[in-house]
Length: 143
Image (cartoon, rainbow, N blue to C red; front, side, top):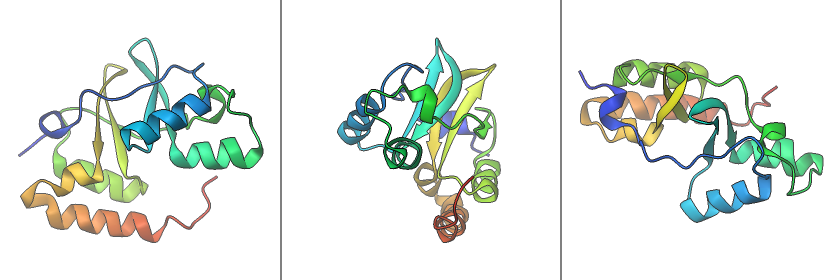
């Protein structure tokens, strides 16, 4: 059975809590990503998603100089690198998330996206089912 360690992206773009949201938006655009882990040293303290930028940043009229720490999601769902791919798919479906930070002893070691799961032949159905479940709930307000 494959684990997240085998499929996760390990060379992730990250930011510090004091980097501003304009820089993060540019980083997302340049790297075609919508999820950036926020780290202090190598410790994961939150994530900034494209939705965080839109809803907690620009929609509340925060300037581009606003630090990541003010808009980041703090209560994030994480996984262990030894979690199986099917467990990760179930977790992502249950929590309605498309990306999962992979953490070992509090340190960010990688990121897995729902698309990474879909690349695994035996999990293609599970990943597409999880993505469908997640997508059906994207219009629901998050508090």
